[in-house]
Amino acid sequence: MPLFLRRVMAQLIRADIVAAKEGRVGGYYMTRCPKELTLADIYRALPEEREEDRQEELDCGEVGAQLDRHLEALMNQAERQLIRFLGQYTLADVMDSIGIGQIGPSEELLEIKQENRLL
Image (cartoon, rainbow, N blue to C red; front, top):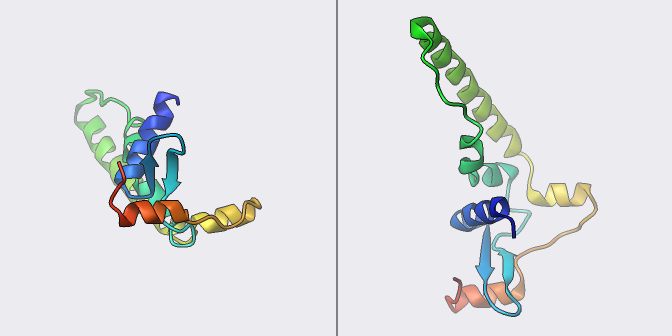
């Protein structure tokens, strides 16, 4: 599995959106029902991907510093609006729109969670 995908999956595991299981029937499993998982939940679970997009600050004097503060405030406001917008849609909505259908936590995963056998 490519490094990028492993990093994304690790973040989703930390957010309890997916779980990993080793072994012959191992892999990644959804831990939450797609009807209950909003796109905002997924977006917030991946902060490292957004942090990489931020550029290194340059020393542009006081005017540059003021401009940077103003732009950062605008970007923070835009991100809050994006999160509110994404919160209106669930993973199930996306799955339905592309014809995948409903997929929830597997019965096997529910058993594993009950027995506290997750990695």
